[in-house]
Length: 259
Image (tube, one colour):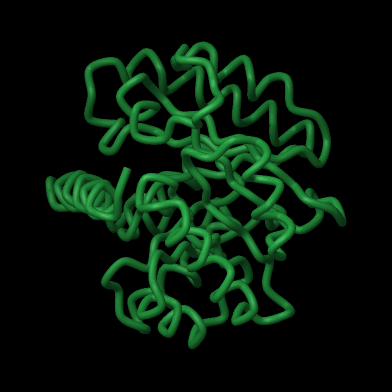
């Protein structure tokens, strides 16, 4: 796993989202969705976080995704869609987890079978007052809107090459959709942009295959820059449980654990 793979995810997510958005006029769907979401209670991510270290599992949709985010001490078995739905059904009040779907998942042939089950599982999680984040390196309004439509509680928005106005727009759109926006960054340049927004939750990418020392150093140097009123999150992949605890000792109150 390296930063080029993050860039590949950004490109895949963006290409799929733009293709779907431009395939026909989506504005009526967007406006209707925003009207319907007005009556939803805003997701309160902070209410699900304890005072100590929170290691939050991110369920990866299939084996191909898991190969990109495999922890060194994890089993080689991969989750599939039915297994993920069972995990969501087991959530209790104020529990939090993430789901990382395949880029462009809604355009695959299997989606017609998976969609009703995912919607039902997310609805049951919401009824249980649990939160489910739509994780992934997304940069398009399509993904924000679709996450809300499916029933997710929050969404990971990646700073990527977005400028200040583009990033702020996505944060505000997520809020309008009653989603908790988690903005992830992978370098100091992106961090400079994010600090100019009012992002309530900031996540630092810490992926072992970029080089453990380099990844941990980025977290160590950047965590203190996150404002005190923001949730400090680390997006981690490829680390052992001991290493995750070490990341927590650096000041990361919450770790989204891919893999």
